Image 1: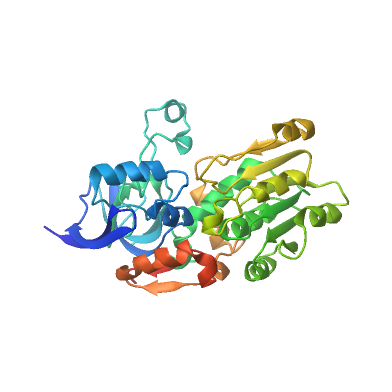
Image 2: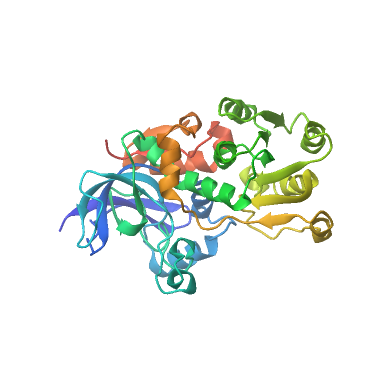
Amino acid sequence: MKTMKAWRWYDFGDMRLDEIPVPELKPGWVIAKTKVVQPSVTEAIRALGLPTLGVKTIRKLIAERAPIQLFGHEFCAEVVEVGDGVKGLKAGDRVAAGSYVPCHECPLCLTGQPHRCRRGPVIGRHLPGAFAEYLALPAEILVKVPQGVDDHEGAIIQPLSSAVTAVATAKIEMGDTVAIFGQGVMGLYCAQVAKVSGARRVIGVDVREETLSIAKKLGVDVTINAKNDDPVSSILDITNGSGVEVAFECAGGGPEQGLAGSSTLIQTIEVMRDFGKIVQVALFGQPVELDTDVFRQKSLAYLFPEAPGRLAYTVDLLASKRVSVKPTITHLLEGLEKIPEAFEITSNKASYQAINPAQVVISR
């Protein structure tokens, strides 16, 4: 029996590099060799058992199935074998993936909307992810990584596709002014995609000068350091008191994780023009108190992104250089054994002055 090395979780904060069997090839699936992988910020929080969306599922999986392969849905891998019935992929192709696998049984799947399915398995939870030498996945959720996109960019296709979906949810109109609270990776990606989608002016807000500097290089029109200036009054001044048509909240979350709590959401509401749209990108990990009368008074729409999709379009944005992710990659590690260090850096990005999650090169 062929074996491989893979990280498995025995408990929160207890991950071990084990020797396990190489996954079995099934019809309609492929086996791929991991090239580059990165933990998402949310995965880094879940791995510690801290409050965030999905941590209850992880707790249950650990309790029932430990040791278990978890996490690792942001990756670039090389196909080594394809199963029966797979079309359009062959050995040697590089691939990335979405997070969700359609169940093909729910009402959404049965009405031609499998990209919206929330009942199928999720990579890194129900299906082993890429914190291993090899992984097996359904071909239907994979997208080819073209020659013009390198392995490091390929590992960012999934989170970038989340930003693409968030911007699509906003339905930006030509000439809109857009505010983005939080200039981490999701904020930086949303900013670029918003510009591609027709925004006339993008305003980026953060408390870190290093991320605001990158935002300027990536095309954000106006940056506001919320440590030095009140973002609400600044944005209202920029828009002559009218506010913005669209805003993305990408900074919220637990202060213990270096995030903004709900304060940036409140600020987002305050800078909205009547009939404006707020897209909630960040995860709070706990209930948030809101004055819904303000939403009613201003006729605001509070929107949440669909399940990440649009992978082919995301790849086109990277290949055509209309969106750039390279400036956000700040920490590169070599070797599967470096995965715990990648989690440490990603869990404490501010301490390490990291922008993107730390990337690990597994094979070349």
